[in-house]
Length: 251
Image 1 (cartoon, helix red, strand yellow):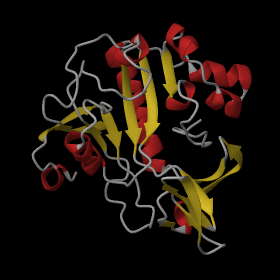
Image 2 (tube, helix red, strand yellow; image 1 turned 180 degrees about the vertical axis):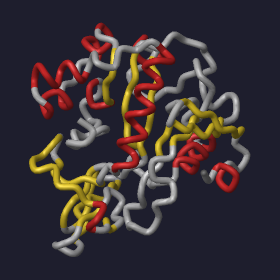
Image 3 (cartoon, one colour; image 1 turned 135 degrees about the horizontal axis):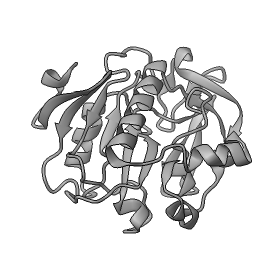
Image 4 (cartoon, helix red, strand yellow; image 1 turned 120 degrees about the vertical axis):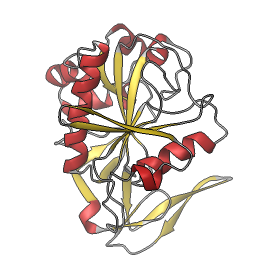
């Protein structure tokens, strides 16, 4: 664990639930909504950023967006392949029963009564360059045609590039979810399911069986999700999102 070196003014502790280790690094009060609310949904996200879960939580604490956060964050591997010390590490950002704004769907019940996790991962990658945002929209910045880049122009190490085999929401290449992240995510999902009484066989898992993997991840209908508690991803309530993508090990 890296909790002592990384906590930096976060309220810290460690809890264990069977094989699951959760490092608590709570944000200051006022950076999340204390609730408590009864949770009926569990949402999966990825951060579209770097690998350190403690830095992610500190950024949530220090930004100007208000109470934007998820209860949990799972560390990953650096996109440049230089840092794996946080890989699979589960960190809790605020106390049980609380919640943060994480879906961008307003104060709907599916938002205020859901638990959620962010997996540290840059998400979509582009080959040969990247699109840089500017006042006119975005401009293609060409780079090495044989390499892959994040949306902010960071070169991805080949070991961190995952080829999905087909496009999902416009992208075929992605920052790989690691085995350690997937294992931790499974343990955490089962823990949250038991803790909050959420049936995580419902929702996206049922939709995968009904529609197929890509179709289920691409499905987007907030009203439907709100009527069907269970396990979902951000893609299921917001069309412009790509977290999380249908990696076979995630499925």
